[in-house]
Length: 172
Image 1: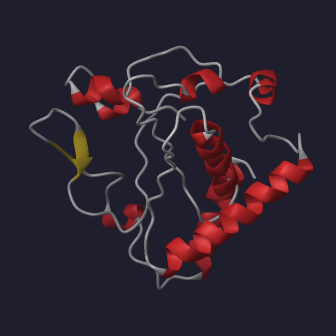
Image 2: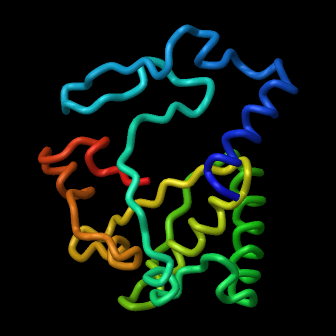
């Protein structure tokens, strides 16, 4: 389901269930922020709803994703079904414990951590009520950008060193 379709579905659900917390529109602001000492913006108050900021949208070639074994467009139904099963099991367990963070790791290099993390993130993002933020925390050799065929741009290390802000490193 596309990003726009998800947004329309969320808006429809909010109209049907007015008991939800006040929407950002009703509060009279779009995304109130404050500037921290580190120079990046954060919400001035915990939002009642997801508060999106402007992020760069970068087009990704379908051929690149398919070549790198990323699950898109029904390319491999058997593997997609396995990731859906994994996604369902993870979401059931994490949501039951009121958790929303997942880390993929292994003791050895080249065990498939990055490919698993990307495909699981893609699978979770296809759920209507889920939003995914995929972070490459391999500080020595980040590689998620390569799977999407994107150039190496400022990332987590640059942010940690104070050379980039959060909005500069986010990519949609």
